Image 1 (tube, rainbow, N blue to C red):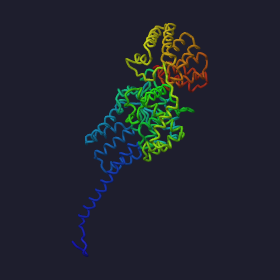
Image 2 (cartoon, helix red, strand yellow):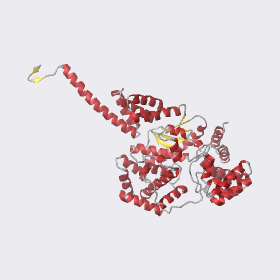
Image 3 (cartoon, rainbow, N blue to C red):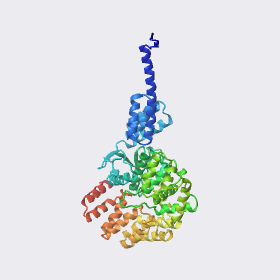
Image 4 (cartoon, rainbow, N blue to C red):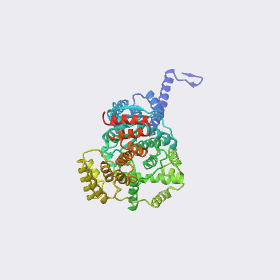
Length: 526
């Protein structure tokens, strides 16, 4: 039909055109929302991801990509059963290897954490989840560490995340292997005991290690990873991620300054002398992929000194600046060059020169700092950390005598081991100090235990024995320091909480004493 020389479409044709045009716009909008959801989930931007996924669910409720993204979002929000169902739907719709990977993680996490107890911290910033039972003993100490870390680190990095953040404590390394991309072999080989992944902090309970580990600093370390990921929209490479986390992991402690431990300094000194530094590229995609605990520790020492070098030039402001610049789209090289005020080509040589000028010290006769996982070979692994066959032989003989409560003879063997290996070996000195305490030789025990303490401040037996020795001399404040340090390494020691309760009573701290009595009953199954 014509009117005035202008062709006019019928109502049906106009409707069909409108539908076609609308469909085109809808497809374009949906594709944009897919991109927005992918980017937001990658950046752990949960608010942005929720908004994009909601739009996709309204536009394409049956689409496999929608199910995949909704499943990833649910995993990052801790809705593991929902994530499993959504990702199963995505896989059935052809989501491929990516969907299968996320489905396995979601399904394993749902199974492993089903029935976990939950505790929301007083300030509401964290939800701590753990297997019911003895791991509950960690909760009050973890809350203190996390909330203090929140106060210090959110200011340092200039980022306040959406809370509450999920913190999951797993009873065994096998659980961490099940709920993460790492294998148990990689965890044990590298000593990776915790992760920050899928928008949550994940650590293994210190009870799965013979002497625990520095889990409190580890929690702060993983929180730093989360802050960096969110603030930078996940654009910081692993070497800078780990450098920042390692350098500032102890900042949650009042007045604590970053310090490279002596064993780490020794590893770095050896690597520098042999010209065998681990390249930044070799640290990717994860430190956990490095071939040994020694290689991992060396890499951490390297990146610690990178941030130390940058902070020496620009102060603690470098933390926020580095992350912000990469969040704005700068490369790691450009961000480092800007913060260091050095072109990248000059930065790495300048850092290596800084290492050479530090006067890195070698460490002879000290036990290595490898994590000692529970298992049938734990005793053999402990002895392997002692240099020298004769020192290992005397230590083993001392252990046999100690088990028979022949403490004087045991102390004699430990002294022989110490004479061979040197008095910086924490394993030998802790055994010797413990035997001397049994003999009532308190002053001598303190002298032997103090010798390796500056080198091995994270070896829990040194603090437990020194705490007992200070108690025997009624030095309650000094005993408190050692026992509280032990709490942040291995709060599952059966005697620790009873001793600390007595210390708090002597210091007129009844609330803390009551907390320790409850912890003592829990750890001892009373």
